[in-house]
Image (tube, rainbow, N blue to C red; front, side, top):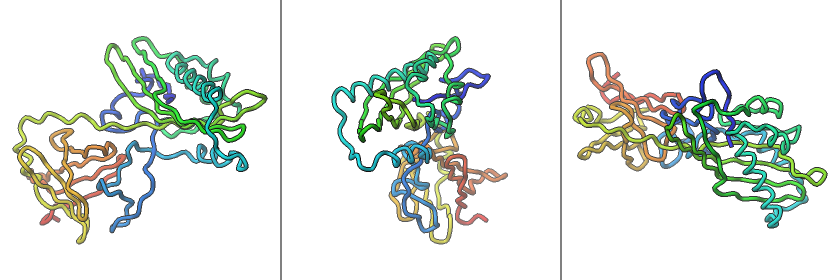
Length: 301
């Protein structure tokens, strides 16, 4: 469940929607597993030019340590029906308490030493988290519920990995988000206490724009070079645009605007076509997480 920073503007459970429209995380973030570097020394994946992760963001070192520090002499075991039901119930109560801002629920289950990693990568203590759990302002409402959960027990510790669905109503506008959360619990004096939690967002592709006049797309067709050995070739087939990087399969470029395109399943990245002062397309900015990789059109400096 993602706790949003409470600013002096109205949240979308507390942050504005512009990042979500740009394909960025608005709850948790995570980074893809490391892959082998490509010919240019960049980490990549077979499916995308910049190896976009299916959900962006960085795995918290604290969440990892919480798992590594579980008792090594206690092999993972499937939770008993009673334990599983108890952990699921507590997880659901915590999620429900986000929209209502009911800190009493969190205080009841959180260990004093707990570490919480939020959707924007901030690491918070219990005291800091308390400042984030506030009721939603007028005009905002919503729910977060567990869609599925996997539970592993290690003696008096347990890891609960769950997929969650958030529905928001912002002045009668409907929004939906999906999250993956990993919680680490430990049993103290017969009671389960939450000692670590990390929230990750399931990033979604933006809705492709409806481009009525696509005649300008012919200007994008051509080869763009990253180096003498690595190129990105843009082709057009009817009213569809495609891009293919050296050594990788061809992928359709879907329009977000007239000049900004993305690949399905890669919401962290964009291809941005850039024109010079004379209106000629001379380069592509390959943007991931706000950082640009420059591809220069063949025949242009």
